Amino acid sequence: MCLLVLNGCGKSGSSAGVSASSSSSSSSSSSSSSGQAYAYIGSVQTNLSYTSTITGVTYPYHVYLPFNYALTTKTYPVIYGTDAQWTFTHFSQTLDARHKDVIFVGIEEGPLNSNRRFDDFLGVGTRNYMKFFKTEFAPFIENTYRTNAERTYVGTSLGGLMGSVFLYSEPVGEPFFKNYMLFDGSFFAYDATDLEVELARFNTSKQLNITLVLTSANPGNVDSVDAFQLRYQSRNYEGLKIYRRSYAIPHNDVANPSFDDNIDLLY
Image (cartoon, rainbow, N blue to C red; front, side, top):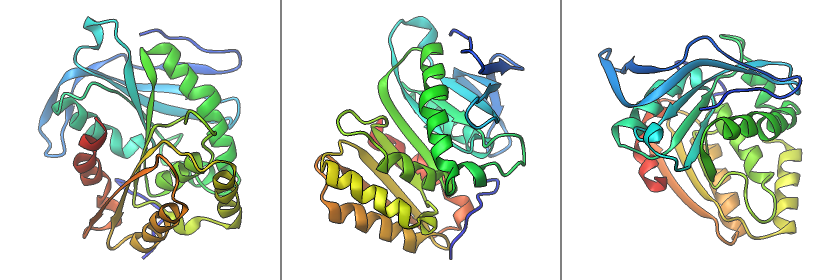
């Protein structure tokens, strides 16, 4: 069964032509999945937004800062998560409850209920989204917060597919993302161009110093995740570590347990 849609599923500033704004500052509590208020040990900044000059879209985003962020001058790894309109609350609470020393930035798909993810995470739109992310959004975040060079990407469904584009576009040498967490990715939407570019990257360099976490749901995209895993394993990339977990749950339910069960592999 192949599913495209996931339902339910510092400083500040901006560069020329790019705007970043916030309608609220920070929050110390949020409703948990059980409906009870969750009290953060760290802090969250919600309802921020960034307008891209590349895609022309304003993307809401939210930031989780670990409990000791304000008390130190240290730098932190940063986790970037897509589809934050569905995942930010649970993911940030998991990191907070486990005292993970990481910054989490959750970026939404664009305007609420816009289905912008179908433009950004599929086909030709992925190129503009990747350019926006690498040249606009990530530099802005990393100039605003005390981050270090370690980045992790988290994406589910179409967000997982977008992660695969970042993965096969990784430069030779130091990768942009050190870790990828791709949950029941919609890899069945791969086309011939995707395969050609991934093969060209392999032929350029067999070195890929990355940790890749893959999960699948059943019913969901288990077959295409299996094929994706097999393709990367068959390349025998040097430095690539792959972890895999499967869930007998529906596609729309896979993000939270995937994050909960695998985040300790990385942090």
